[in-house]
Image (cartoon, rainbow, N blue to C red; front, side, top):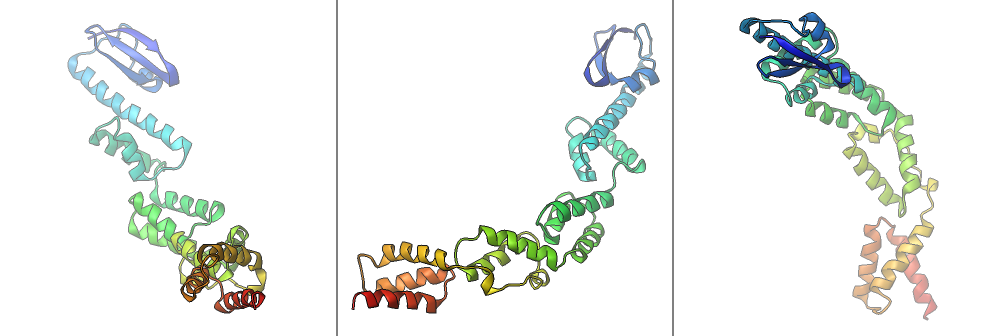
Amino acid sequence: MQIVKVVEQKGGMFKIVMDNGDSFKAHEESLVRYRLMKGAEFDEAEYGRIMQAIQYDRAYVDALKHISYKLRSISEMREYLSEDYGPDVISETIHRLKGEGYLNDSHYAEALKNTMLNTSDKGPGSLVRELKKHQIDQDIIMRTADAFDSEIDNERMNRIKARELKKHRGAYRQFRMKLHEKLYQKGYNKDHMDMITFDDDEFDETSHFEKDFEKYYNKHMKMDGSYAARQKLVQALMRRGYNYDMIQEKLGGIDDEFI
């Protein structure tokens, strides 16, 4: 078998055409290593070995390109390579990448922890969920999650609270409940919640109460002043987190207007 044509393509790739009509692609490194030049001849056994070696080379180079964009977990790399390569090539490529330090699930977990800690509001629980998705070893997961937990402090938790409070529209009591729910979803636990300082004086809910009161008053009592309608109004506002005494005081003021 003889090479009749070598055509350079994009990305350091070359297309090699054989005299029997077969063709394949190889990286420049493989071109040099196996002397894939026009006129080169191979017997079938040698040609088969070269084809297999080129597969390994291509998989390795493709893997390096994939890693160059961002750090990858072992399972993520295995899934990526499975689109173009068989199990043997994938196993050998991953083994090589691990040996050369390009793939390391401990480093991946540490990098993800630092990213979540420094660029997001997510907590250790979110880190654990994400690492499990990547099939990281349980010992690595727990060790990294414990390290994350040790770096969470009052400043972080109160900073998250302050940011969420700026967006809140409604009762302060409702805010506290919603914040706890949101933080649990983000992967925090009760110990983290206890780091947060709440102060009733830090948020004026009066304007929000007035708007909500008007909304539910118009819905339940504007056309119906019955006791049942009044109770529906009270219940709707209490579900919004407003204090019962505040609601009754407002209703009392309205009653006084009609006396």
